[in-house]
Image (cartoon, rainbow, N blue to C red; front, side):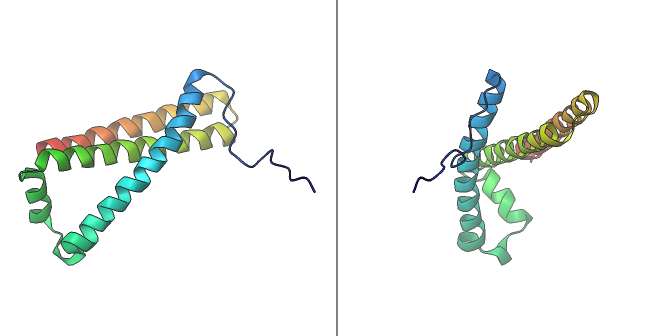
Length: 128
């Protein structure tokens, strides 16, 4: 009995190089996010303790001897999470918005929201 493996894996896009990069980015960023978020949750919930998390704990973490590491870690978590999520929204827009004008408008809006959120998050991380 033959098994149809045509749909066993997600096919790589055959479009331009941006779509190929986007396809690879989703897989790599998803793996990195899973590892980073798991480490973050274990550290914050079990090592520090959920009831102990407050403003002083975060301030101490960002200004202490390992402050550069934690700021960089949080920045990468922000960048990977936001770009991964907004790239997923871009995929949904490509699939469900058929009007070229609306598609351009919504993808521009998604890019603008991504930019604003990353700038605001980075501002908080680096000026805290």
